[in-house]
Image 1 (tube, rainbow, N blue to C red):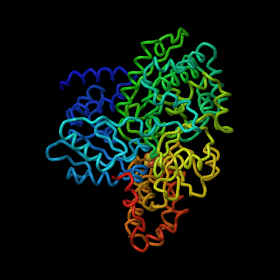
Image 2 (image 1 turned 180 degrees about the vertical axis):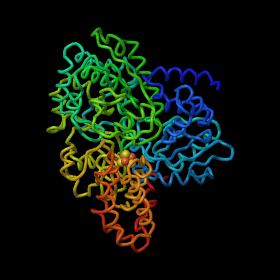
Image 3 (image 1 turned 60 degrees about the vertical axis):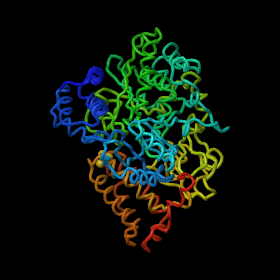
Length: 605
Ligand code: SF4
């Protein structure tokens, strides 16, 4: 099959990027889709031929990834998020409006081929909710009017500018904020190397290469009390120390930029506004464990970010911060990006490695752990974007300084994405251990529309919920665990008194049922059953005995699955049934006693 030149060149680049050809599978399909609108059988066969795989294998692998389309889409593919943060601010109403205006439903195309529509899971714009993506452009803080104007403009042939990250990450600093990794947010051209150098860029790397041994770099990170920001909170330096010390052995640094936890949207502005900070963090990690190759795995929806990071990598190579003999130290490091294609499960570290190897993103059974047997069977360090972005400042300004910014055993600062029913949703960099009540009342401006607080999801949708009276606590890993919840990925979702908790549980379960990879039965069957039960309950068909059953079914999933997704689905559900049983009982009369649409007038003009 003869390909357009631009695609041919892309395929050639991708095929040279990895040690095995199969790794190029998903990116090749996604780029082919960009050109042809979908991936047809001929393209499947062509990709298969180039990576020495059967078309059947290519087809079954691609079927796993929700962004890969096997049927044509419209010229403008409209994807409306209705996940938790968007739901709380009118996402369902925006979806209904688009559906009626375009006269099409989920996964349909208008007769003239101009538009197609999809209701999608979290797109990583939670602080700018309600939000949608059209092709790869993000549009945030939508109202009915702005959505109407946007669709009309596209229909007339113009392409309105996508929303800048101002809605979430760039705002007037609150005095409590301590800008360390977000210090470049809002600085003009901050993605460029020269601007980064003016803000202490690559000074941490210089110290790591010229003044410290690899072991000393690991020790410095250990002393900083930096804990993984992806969710688990594992001490980063300790994780690095598990990698076997064998300088001759191939090892990898893998950056997890597959940010998909509902309520969390910080990796996007970090990569968009400070890509060199991330690159520097990856190279320092390489120096620490004596690895010479790294990949940044970026979720497929963040296409424009991928291009920004690619340009920054190119700049870093040109100026000697990547490649051979970095800063004259004799240390070599190569770095490239990789794109996912829509699968929450690939955020799990072993599933991410499978995906990078060109397979379905199924998790691996552990042990062995990635530090010993990881990507391509080699020892691998895998860290999240926020974690690696913190490393340059630690190396430049010292472990003691960084550690002192946070609380005991929880060093430094972190980015909190505050979304939902607050007056000032946004991404705020605050010291670890900052009080949650103050965070909502002072930093995020209090509960919107003068309402009362009902609940908080403290760290992304997989965390047990806190009641309003439980939020006077420090936001660090240990305090949240003590309170029966988790700090997770820092996605703080705020829920006011007008919200139906049964509806919220229903929406959360829809997400996990959609994202379950289906490998293990408790997760596959459990999430599907719970989704059905919660749907039925919310629409008035629930039975009294279902209340206990929902809790029991959720508990049966805990600890019985290959990866944490089963627990992620169960934990918020258990907490909602336990803390708000009266709301389930109120639905036994047949109707939802809440009227979510009424609560949204402030954002739905
Ligand atoms: Fe797949 Fe769910 Fe099992 Fe994880 S817990 S492996 S997502 S079926």
